[in-house]
Image 1 (spheres, rainbow, N blue to C red):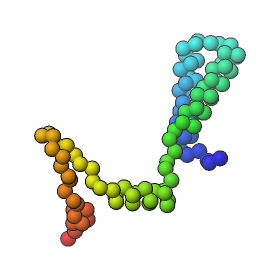
Image 2: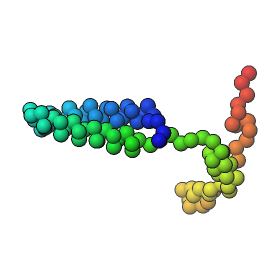
Image 3: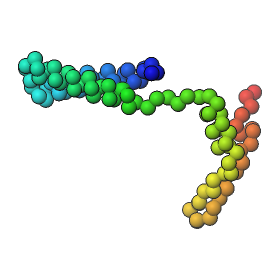
Image 4: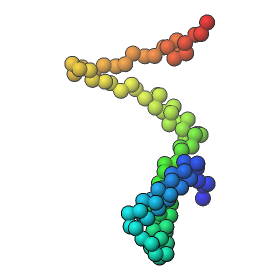
Length: 101
């Protein structure tokens, strides 16, 4: 099982704290059983949030292959305001890498 990321830990922890405070204030419970139930529910909610945070995509051979296949594809035609299909101008190397003097 992969280790949790910093974002997963932060979102999960914040969810537990905020949801516990909100549920305790809204329920106005004062019994130990009520506090335990609310705490368990907040922990479950925090775990759910932490597990549903999107993981960063891995960069490697797959990313290089999909990127190369996208650049090899034909440019997508864009329809202008008049309805005609326009092909975007090709980008030159000077436009992508400006020369600094």
